[in-house]
Length: 400
Ligand SMILES: Cc1ncc(COP(=O)(O)O)c(C=O)c1O
Image 1 (tube, protein in one colour):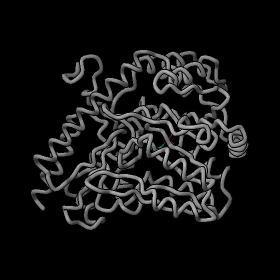
Image 2 (cartoon, rainbow, N blue to C red):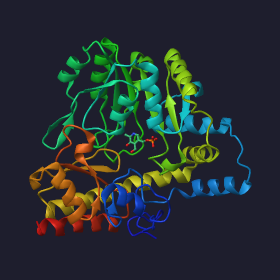
Image 3 (spheres, rainbow, N blue to C red):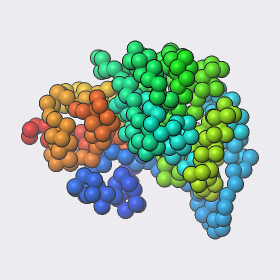
Image 4 (cartoon, rainbow, N blue to C red):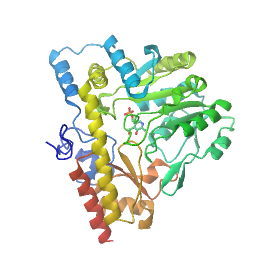
């Protein structure tokens, strides 16, 4: 049993190298980073087993042996609705929900559904890089509303946003709440300001809230859709169990669209994409995740463990690698490290992390303008593994 948690063992090191893990597979590491033996901290999933009730439910589902087409039973909806009510006081009507195989597929459907070719979609860079691909794949253009960084803290640039929304081709903003990679959990005030600007300028708000359950102690997630009636009617909220309970490989998310017209357009487009019909295992896992008390307890323990990892990381770099600055995350298990004091060009920093520190990280520059000189590290791993990564960086810096 873990030293740091009496009930759930997040310290257990599990070999993922032979499990077809996108993060750990040696062939993938070789192809993407040129070295199969790097220690991986890039893909945003966790090196922890999912809560036991989910594993048991999946085993039970597998043992039944018939894997025909699945429905979404009433108990599935009850669990989803109860989760959002319990955790966020959000009363969802089951008819507002659409299921997609993931949040990224949902963003694809949304851009396709609500924008025409040549329209512009606003993103707040640096940001989760698939957003750029989703926009361009649908024949749309990216409109940047860069985040401002001051005293190691990011904020939205509303002055710039006011200008960007005036672009006649601007139609949508893809919000990231909490924001990957910089870890902000947007406050009610920030979301209200953003929402007002969008209402006044007829910009649809599509909010990627995939990390919304991963809020570090001391911070609070605010749901954009419930801030006022106008926002309710002008938003698409993307949620999932994939990050929360480490179920990303099961492929299911719930997209909440309250505005009936928008919802119908989304559903029609999704049908045209041919992406429909839930996955039997994903449905079983999501229902269990949202309804089983042990899963909720597991999540609370996970957040404590992540806080411990963050404290460890903060203390470590302060003491041993002071040239690297931590951008304090408020949510997610992704940490944005400011490495600019190392005075390396982005390609040199990348080479340094791969060849000298032997780590597979997501380079800051792939998150777009403003990401250069930063690294994103995933701390959802046993503390001993995180320590290895930091030791590698320390040794490599000493040799620099
Ligand atoms: C902000 C954000 N959105 C979406 C995703 C991917 O979601 P999905 O696997 O549901 O498509 C990730 C995964 O890292 C993410 O960080």
